[in-house]
Length: 504
Image (cartoon, rainbow, N blue to C red; front, side):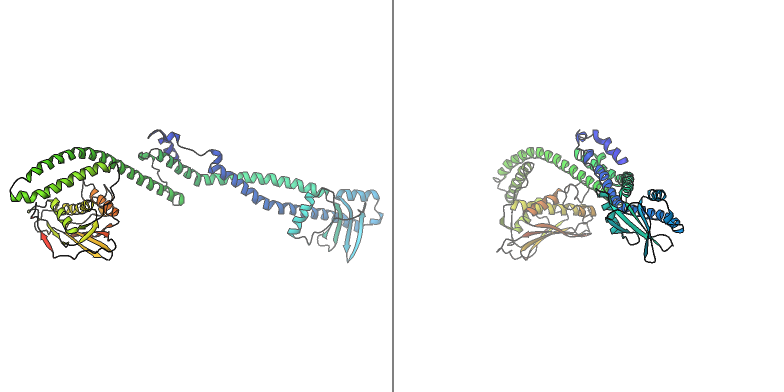
């Protein structure tokens, strides 16, 4: 089978462990169990046929003996039974195996031949009235009785209208039934073995070998999941086995992609950790230089220096967080009461949208609107979402295009909802399908998709969720929903404030 050859051929590759994959011993395999069960079930079926067959043989034997006796009786009745010699009577009785022969007609019974009348008759058998159940009972008694028994067998023979009776011993009947039972048992065993082999061969080809191939494929794939050659190649079958093979192949491909992405993430994490180690030192030096800017009396410098210092502090904190990320998961959020409008302003400042950028940033969040969140983590959520929106709208330089990014918030029952809306080209189908998956949810070529993945992880840690509300040509809306602590109330929204790159 091609599948078997493929799996065995790949055993030498990978990490060298495939050759040591566990295997099922032959004595405990499905094929061995199937063979024995098939023989057992066929034998049970033969037993159900065997018992009635032996009983029917006993009835046929007695019926044949009665017909033979009837032939002699007709000859005697046409002659003179009284003139029959003793020697001739004994020969007749010996030939038929009977101890006595009688005929009944017109209600009268006439004894034709008798050698020695037994003292008693153990069983009366009326061949014309014996049913199947009674015949089986008589057969059991005849086979398993330890002593000789005398039978009176009678019945109609042919079209003569006469009933013939014979008195016989069951010794010959028992011997004939035992021989017949032995022959039937041997034949049944041969049929069982032959049938079992045919059934086994058919089921082994249809089921056992494909299942064994799938089992070997799983063992080989587990030994080297990064080896694409160990993914099972499904056969062109429309039954359950074919479906299982296709599902297994899809599962192995999905797992292989996931492992490949995890490896890429691990490699990226190592590279980013190295970069951030040096970046943290450079940012620390930049902090020292920026501290001296506070001593300059220029009003413009004095207005920009605090924001620059906050940005550098945040960058240093991010670098330290990236270094810690490789060792632990994201730190749990430290929830505090925050003014959302201030966080949105800080996000706008870090986007560095220049006066000539052509992108309008609108902060519609009221100055008193409050949320319960971790300030640094939620800043990263909004920064990633807004940066993605700005990058999406920056791809087209047509001056007639409306490029607007709007951040708004409102209280919705027991939750706070923050909407980030842009007028970009919308998300492609591939990005929508893998929206929050790293390396697969990027909307642009060469992107990593980490921004949405990080935002999703941080919002989930807050007990909230991110939803893609709408996307299409000219409008994309993301919603961040955060739970509101019991008793908290969001501030009233203020009038719309519009800025167009007037800072930074």
